Length: 128
Image 1 (spheres, rainbow, N blue to C red):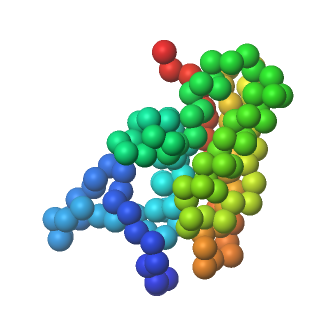
Image 2 (cartoon, rainbow, N blue to C red):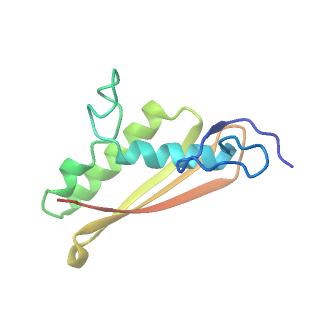
């Protein structure tokens, strides 16, 4: 069993069936969950950390174009680089889906002290 280096609380606050304590997300899963949270966090949503987050919602209301795809990619790259020190970012690719009015974002990274690449795919769509 691999050694636990990083741990965070699980996003659903699931309880351990035997210990009755909140279970932890460890290593790759903890970093992956943290990146997803950073992407969906907007500026001024976190108390005392107004700059934390990617600020993606404002880009989702712009017209879909190559410039907007680039802007989404750069915001995500900058956010992960600045606020997730446990991840080595490899690439971020945003692909616009004009018919569905959303973006499919693919993020590839590795966890520090590990060489295995991890890929996250998320659909970003605006919500009224």
